[in-house]
Image 1 (cartoon, rainbow, N blue to C red):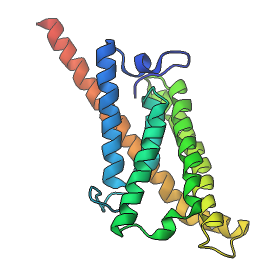
Image 2: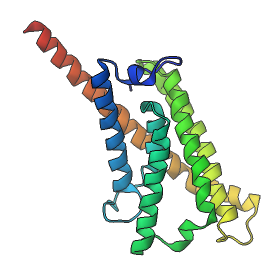
Image 3: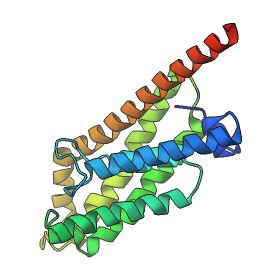
Image 4: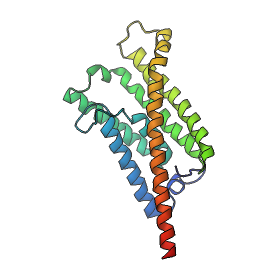
Length: 209
């Protein structure tokens, strides 16, 4: 992923090149993340049932790659709209939209912030991979505690909810959540690396021409 140093304009730091190129690439990244969320979140007209939800990864990557803070609000609005459309279509259970649903706001904010933190730590070198892994794990732990803990204690689906009961569920569900987040982020890193190699080769060919 492209270097993002603290104190620099994220648009310049993430994308480089001219301001027009930077805006274009930001729009492409934002649209791609929105399509990924729409294709994998729940069951609705645009979803692909075989794919696990990429929502955690979308918010993490948006925090790392998109410069505008308004993008967070836009993605949360998109997630909510997809859930409401699924509820209206009868493909999302009503209990999914319990009062506990709104704990997703701080949960997604934690993912966004995790992306921002990693952006400031990133370097274009393999040595940055352990940093990414540590940030992903820490972010996933916080997000899981907020989202799953909020649902467990506030949704009303577990009338006898206890801290011990919640902790007992962690080994069963947390690894899958972390694995899905890491998998989509790794895919994004691979795509970014491939595109940067192609751009580099294209630049060298143009220089020789």
